[in-house]
Amino acid sequence: MRTAPVFAVSAALVAGTTLGLAPTAHASGTAATGTTVRFVDIAGDGGTVLKANVVTPAGADGASRFPVIVLPTSWAVPQIEYLAQAQKLADSGYVVVSYNSRGFWQSGGEIETAGPKDVADASLVIDWALAHTPADPDKVGMAGVSYGAGISLLASAHDSRIKAVAALSGWADLIESIYSGRTQHLQAAAVLGGAGYLTGRPGPELRQILGDFLSSDLDKEDEMIAWGRTRSAATQLDRINANGAAIMLGNAWGDTIFPPNQYASFYEKLTGPKRLEFRPGDHATAEATGLLGLPNDTWTSAHRWFDHYLKGVDNGIDREQPVRLKPRSDGGYESYPDWKSVGADERKIALGGTQRIWANVDSGANGGLVFLSNILDQLVQAPPTASIPLLPRAFAGVWQSERYGTAQQVRGTAKLHTTVTSTKESGTLVAYLYDVGPLGLGKLVSNAPYTFHGQTPGKPFTVDLELFSTAYDVPAGHRLAVVVDTVDPLYIEHNPTGARLTFSSPAGDPSYVSVPLRAK
Image 1: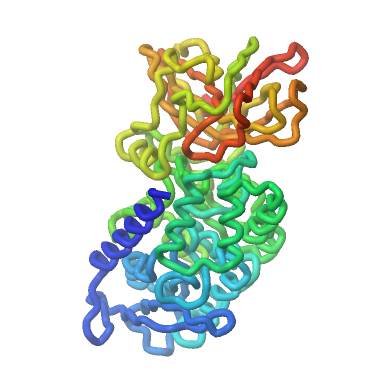
Image 2: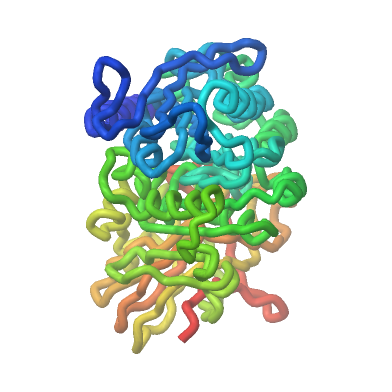
């Protein structure tokens, strides 16, 4: 839980800095550019007061109507979060209403974690904007980072007035985000829970779910999954597609709160206008400089998205290839017609032979620390590392490819297929893919956890696991290594004392990791 205060303080600092860099307002409430900024109270669901700010374009005389964008705040961040972006949008002719999500800071109510009340709040904020600002009812958009992204997507399923959405560093599937592979993402949940308690008022349902989740109460698993599904846009795809809003999704490759896989899967099932963008970084770091009012590629794309789908500007974004990626290297942006084209080629690494490992010991291979590790990768291309030759084989299974004569451009989702035999009925394994240099130092390319329950001790079973999607260039002369162990500080493990796991590769069903590669 030590990371939670760090997250909350960081969020507050970001918001505070945003306020400092946003254009200052005069005493009359008119910004230097002629736009006006007002701080207002909006009645949400059940009359709950939502603290909000409204930025109106210059020249709003009551006769003209402007597109409106509604911005719910991120988890644990005050309502000033989006002021810099709101000012930029207002300068280009938008009414912008940003509000503090219920249960946080000065807004009333309790934290619902994007529950029905949060979705109702979004529609009531739109109602307020249409009644109290020069907003055009036919040109309504929503956007947000993290929590605001999740609420925006869910609102687009329930409110057909929403014509365009920019959901940045958010989730479409809450279960696949923090409970992927049926493994609790410990640090992610601790950060969110801690920040919620520090800056808001978690409701009784959230307190119960968080307690059950962190305590590994398997008797409550079905209840936890049902709770998460009601808060997942992926379960409301039919409604979102029927409403037809133009959906832009943006995320970071190393997002340790909402990994990219679930966004990519959701994107593929959208039938309306859509766009998917991935960049290096961790949770919300791809958008951070934009919140400070600085140039930012993600926000630039979001503005272009709204300009086209709300204003009707012919800026060409609808004719561009809709999947846009920035690899975790010095390479520039790449564009693709769809997600399946990202890793069109494939190379398999055979997981031959039989390897047995003891559980309950961290081998030294791990995914790093929430936020810190992937921010370092974003800024200086320094992902978590491990010396592959020195990994203790009693606690880690290790397989390596040949050395590659040419650079390998890993793009998309690597997949593990193997046969496991456990001495216990429950257990957890974590799979890693490393880029290994000539001296044996491995740089983490991707990872993912997997937990099983109810297996018969001594009886083999099949494991199929998707690693977290990525875009990583392996230099010529390097090789890829697959490592599997049982302990990682990012995740809660379920390995009984004394458990052993055996990884085998039956002749009729060989084990492998398929690595997606960019087509030549």
